[in-house]
Length: 288
Image (tube, one colour):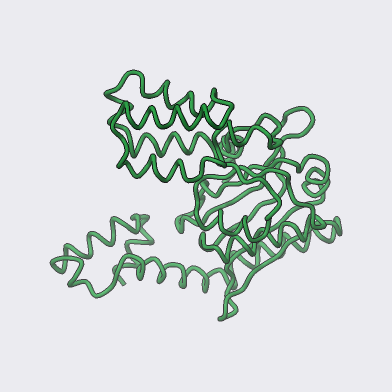
């Protein structure tokens, strides 16, 4: 009852969990984990959706399909026949993807409701460099199975056409699903996200070393030959004594997805970041 009361009052899950733990003398005495509490919310929300939000959404989908038979939607159910993931694309999105879907940006960063469920979108450019939405999803979670399902649903709507290049953030589950469903698509990482991770993991160098940012930027933007890039990266490790830093190690492991020396041969429509999706997400706040 207290969990439900905190939830209905708009208190964040993390804050309510910590409050409950303090009441009983610590997390170990609480009897459940934060993930258990999250799962409880998810299960309850699914039951509420069954006859509420979901019915309204399907009425909208059916109305759209009645007006245009090209409107496409797909729903994934779990073992208990409860709604998990939802995908839709209208006729204009399908036409736009056929024309401009060579390079797409995909992210799940915009969370619109108190359940923090991701609203994900495939986004690209048209011939006027205007942002174009190709499809939208409401996701239950961000697992390999979920991403695999949504990618397959998207390509079914798009007659099987897959992009030449896809830009994403550093989501490992997403990366695995892309390798399973889009084996011939070049997967590139958003440089903006990489730099945001750098701010978290090597912020002491960014703050204290004046030349560090320019040295790092050069690896992203300047060095076009692999030998030049690897030499510059090694020089950074020596210069700032960063051999044991986990961010440098993990970032170098995926260099084929972001370093100019490796990605220069992939078609990108001059896109280097998923900020295309980010800008659309910020605009959505006016409507949701």
